[in-house]
Length: 219
Ligand code: 5GP
Ligand code: MG
Image (cartoon, rainbow, N blue to C red):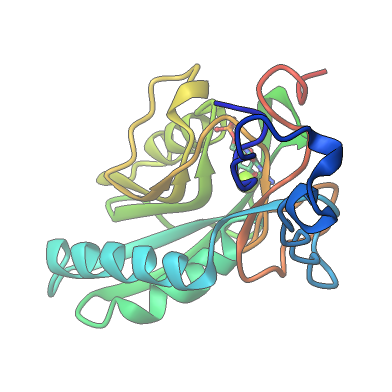
């Protein structure tokens, strides 16, 4: 590709300096769109709120059809799964649904700290029940793998997984999500429940943090 792409062609034999100023001026590039207030500086919107809503709607239809008329216990993983679950669960109209939560934490900054710590609060009633584990993102699979094993040990009759985002390139533990909304490349994302050190969970879009491509984010 030529470095003068977009410039008017120079008539043959005319020295650059002899051309009128107008002809030499570089094409005007649109300034980068300003980041809305409250968004991470330099972040790139990967999925807009509209695209997320469409993905959540598709997943809900599928889950609603699969569990039509049946009992289902949704176990939402705190904190990241909360926003997604809040949109998904009211769309499951044809299911006899119970709601439970469990907390898991494996990230510090943009680096996974290995095996997650899992906390329950209250009895977590899953014995003999069909369970739908709901989380924001399936990354290495450690979190969902650990929580899945914990629920199996507590006697869940079946366990399916619903994640809004899947980052398959980073899988370490063999975990598959029966329901997944959008596939993300190996970048660290925030928004729609996902945070960086507690921030940006409230953004309606999913945004890649600047400078967190593979290799850069890992400690
Ligand atoms: P895993 O245990 O599968 O590696 O990671 C799962 C958890 O790590 C997710 O529930 C989420 O809290 C966090 N996580 C993984 N990737 C990202 C990311 O790109 N952005 C944010 N904000 N959190 C992530
Ligand atoms: Mg999480």
